[in-house]
Figure 1 (spheres, rainbow, N blue to C red):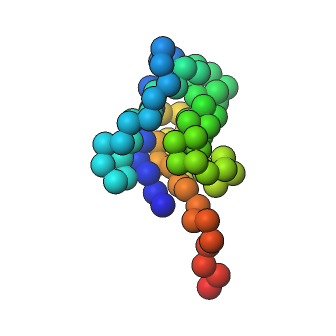
Figure 2 (figure 1 turned 180 degrees about the vertical axis):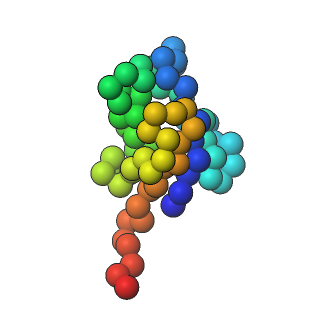
Length: 79
């Protein structure tokens, strides 16, 4: 599943807000330095979707607020 996420680092309160099926706004308290906000984003999404962090990856936007996040299917199909 591909998600389009807008991240707000240095937020006072952590929050995941669903905009539509594929768009989310996520506020994290971590700063964007040294990838801390990206790690906090993955942690927040893992809690929100109740899945392991290992199933979540950032595919685009590592250094910007707008990111594309991939969530692996629980049972991927083998082709």
